[in-house]
Image 1: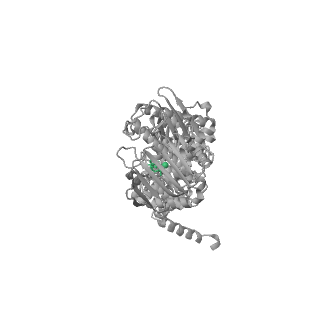
Image 2: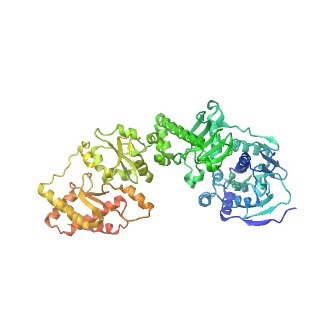
Image 3: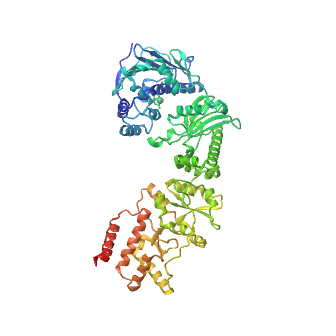
Length: 633
Ligand code: ADP
Ligand code: MG
């Protein structure tokens, strides 16, 4: 009756995965039911889509449903669906290899991290949910008949140990797939009705096809999103969210949108409490499920929301989209575009209200999702709203708190027309950055940016409310800043230089340029420094050091860019240099000191690749100064 079965080996990743599953904690084995029911539901969704597209299918009159049958005596559970089914070729491709990009990496990560952990909550996300059946199965038999009229039914058999068998069947079968699970001795409970029923209710309550257990219909197919908001309990939203995302936590926020005009649609959107990228979730996982009249037509559609709102999970259902729309034309569909515009506005206003109502809760949101939200600088249509939702660390905020641009502007000095920012590795590093010394002295607030994307966002904004230009500290017009009165009323202890000394200082600057040669574009007196002797800045009109670094990194360019070297005339070290220079312009100590100052500045800017010379020089200096220590005399 059956043609000869062929034997196949599982791919390495699958074997690795099976090994993890067998060794993982058994607290949540029931989730195999969720995974198989969800696959059955996917298969039915795909079939429904084919029907609405007018494709020719077999067994047209079969009800679209999922049936579970239990056989306690033989330790058997069977999960069947009347979905699209699989041909031999498809079964080899879909079960036995890992198609989804990133999943192999995920498995690698899991095998090093997650042995003896409960992996049940993440497995379904990576296109490997089917294999969870081997937590309970001694053997699995899949019988499947594709919806394509010419397809031949197949039988797939495996014990989950390295290989599977596949045979084409001679008799024809009704369309769909039957998964027969021979339970392990210690998993017999899954042939009990109460157990399976509870698992289906818990995990598969929102499946939009009837689920029958031993002929009895179980779920009620609710479409939560079409209920009036006032009828829906918080727990129902949470349950739907968990069903949708496999997240074990409640969502941070729920946004329920029902619109009648200019297009009609309902949408449930959720903001998760955490990002899901810890296991390297790929782009395929971004997007909203798109339904037309409650028929799922596209899982995770990424045209509905822009990338910067990609942290949002959820679904949209609209009767105004044609049921048989192809994925390719979805993107250009006017209704889809309109829905997308409305959704973006809804999300942004939701966030606006959240920020107004509870700044701490908004900060919490910002901490988790701010990084991706910042990418919104290219959404010109919504920039005004978007810009108000940005938050920054700044010299005027307490540690852990943030500021908006609106709040910054409320604090600006009378004549200040710019919003200043600086980019660096951390708050600590920035607080002692020499470039900020003049800003501290004048009490001018500076935004602290840490992310490579920040600088793109900031240049994307350009000006806030057209009045306030965003300017990097390094590129600030210091003549404007000098006009602002000092707030730190600390008198400079350095006496001013006489006219003659000023001239010598000019000469010293030339000497420094000679020493550094081509490595710098210019050497000049610094207006920005107070406590530091020297620093490097970008020449006017060029991009900031940070932006330069980001671009160099992208181009794998490790060269040191030429910058302006600034010396603080009032610093005691520079004064001492001046004295030495006056006595003997050729004194080698000057060369040594200049090299040291230059390399220290490079080090602060993150450009020093070889610290050996610098360290040797410091040791030589320490040695000399220890010679002068009073205890040695
Ligand atoms: P995912 O569902 O995330 O793709 P799974 O490991 O659960 O990953 O399933 C792998 C693939 O096997 C599915 O994408 C589908 O193509 C196929 N498949 C599994 N179960 C069925 C089914 N009942 N009917 C048709 N195809 C199925
Ligand atoms: Mg699946």
